[in-house]
Length: 108
Image 1 (cartoon, helix red, strand yellow):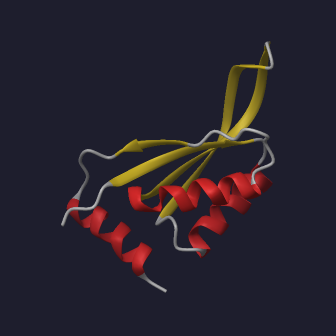
Image 2 (image 1 turned 90 degrees about the vertical axis):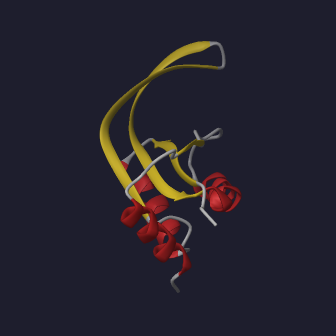
Image 3 (image 1 turned 120 degrees about the vertical axis):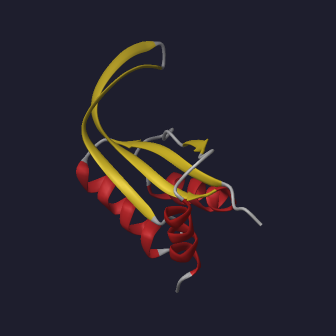
């Protein structure tokens, strides 16, 4: 059976919170890999005001069956009132890499 793979996007206000979430996701076997991308500037509307913030972006590599647990972990540990949690489906990927994701998520 072919697994459904996802990349989940989540922005964080600083390196400390981004690193904390990344380690929690890996330590709990919810993600195979989390990339932390610094230097992101977000422009968004919040409570009827346009805001600009420097943020870190997490790219969380996982499977879709882990999404509910990942979303709950992020909500529980994220400093934002409403954290970004957006999952996109991976339509194609190198078979060896996708197999590696499976191995990471099933290892203890």
